[in-house]
Length: 217
Image 1 (cartoon, helix red, strand yellow):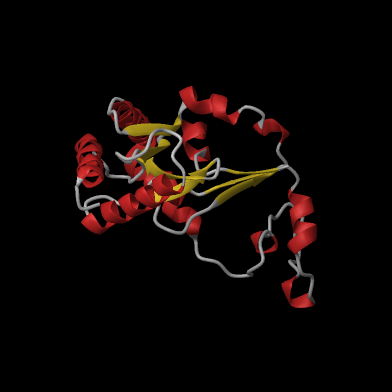
Image 2 (cartoon, helix red, strand yellow):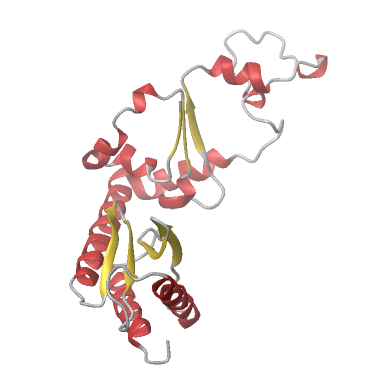
């Protein structure tokens, strides 16, 4: 079994989120991207394997010029992935950990989760919005309800919400993406930008509501 999770870094460094990590001990391999939520510059991916020899048997090449003499006890990382040469991506992660420290990284993730939950709660309190998927860490999805339809709207609601996400992005103050939940369009929000502030998330509420209720939409 392989686990590929964008949120894995938060579950690893914040004890209160480790329940999302339950069962990971059954995985044969785990990969996550520190450039997604740990402030590391693109690109930086980290993976763990239960049995490195299986990986090496799959990817290693054994021409004479690549054989390592006296290799007993030496880990040859050129055999752990397809390219023989690679940038020192791990150095970027090391610099972030040294520059900010574990507690600062934890605080940022906790803030993102708290701010996202607060935004979802504010939108849920508005009569013309519905929360489609509740916050999972700092990610949730929502839908705006057109005045001419009720909850459970179909194609009209999908067109309306696609137009809304485009209008929000054209506005330029925030950027959101769309998804589909049970076949219907929903808009995704995630607080995850490394230097985001609570004021930024508060502004997101204003932008979403302003764009949704603009009569020109």
